[in-house]
Each structure stands twice: as structure tokens, then as C-alpha cells.
Length: 247
Image 1 (cartoon, rainbow, N blue to C red):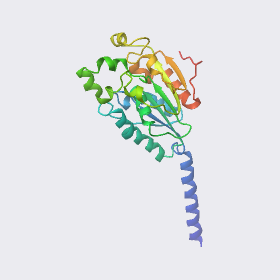
Image 2 (image 1 turned 60 degrees about the horizontal axis):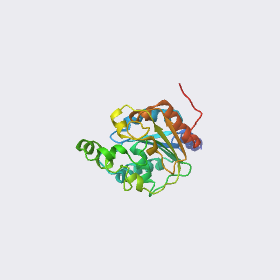
Image 3 (image 1 turned 90 degrees about the vertical axis):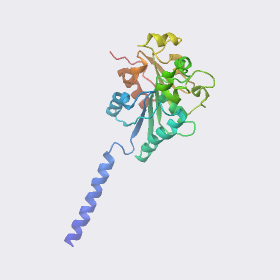
């Protein structure tokens, strides 16, 4: 009888321990954030943002994808789809996405045939939502084709380009544009304010809920302190903090 009581006590206490561990685990019912880097970049470019989001209480999935070897549709289905499935398997109640550059178009492509859980939000950083003027001017050059692959041929500004033929998508989407450049030559080729790769006006699209411009260049904007703070603010509030300033 004594042995039986001790066994039952052990099983009961073990169950409590498991329940407590599950309850405290950051992955059980957590808000997940998927990070999508830009063209010809890797997940390493998003690590400062990954760290910032993790410190802000989110569980982050930062997995690279072959941006220069696949079409946007293939990337959306095979790679973003796998990331979303990973979040669902871990019990995510909300699956947010934060993108840089091409990543924004990948999300829009994914949402053509898929959806995210209610309450999920998306932040697009420097996205070519109406296409890239640089793609228009450079797409025929061999170096551009080699470096940017099939997706680089899809993101022009013409009416038949991928960004301009995608259907409207549902969701709370915030867009952050940059207006500083480290490449005067590219900026000369881009009309209006730009970040050295994408014009401010072409980051906008009809479905966005909020929009903000931050002084930063395209290549480094995802690691900009103000940008990272605004991304977290939007994920938590559904709008940007337009009163925010950071020295």
C-alpha cells in the first residue's frame, strides 16, 4: 500500500511539473514572428531584428530562403509555407511576419491562397509593393540576372509585373519606408525620395493600414533602431507610433 501511494504521488507530482513547464514555455500559445530577409541576403541580415523581437517577448522564426534561385511563388509556397507550418505545430495563436524588401512581395504572394490566424500582423520594411525601378533598368544586364535570379525579373514596375498583378490581401499591414541612400547612382535612376533601392512611393499599396518613413538606407534599414522599435510597436498595437523619437 505504501509503495502504491508513493507511485501515485510520483505520477501526480510529475504531471504537475510537466504542466508547469508547458505553461511557462514561451512557445505554448505564444505570438510568433516570422522574419523574411530581402533579395540576395540571408537570415544573418535579420539577426539584430530577431534579437530585438525576442527581447520584446516574441518567439521568432528566422530561416533563410534561396531568394536568387526561385520564383516568388515557389519561395512563398515552399519556404514561407514551411515556416508558417512550423509555427502552427508549436501552438502559435498569432503568426506575425516582418519582412525586408522582397520578403514583402513573398508574403503578398503567400496570402493569395493562404491565410494567417486572426490577430496576426505584418510589417513590411522597404518593400517594392509597386515594383522596383531598378529592376526595370537593370533586368537585362547579365550581372543583375546572375545575382538576383528569377525573382529579380518579376519585380518591375510595369502593369504586368508580379507586384502589380497580385490580388488584394486581408490583414493588418504596416509599411516602413526609408529615405536615405548610400548609392547616389541608383538614386539617380529612381524618381523622388528613395532608400537607394526602392522609391518611397513604390513601397505603398492600398491594403496597408499604416505607413511611416524613417531616415535609413535600404541595405541596413532592418537593423535601424527606430525601425526595429516601430516594428515591435505595430505588432503590439496595429499602428505605428508617429509621436516616437529616438536620439
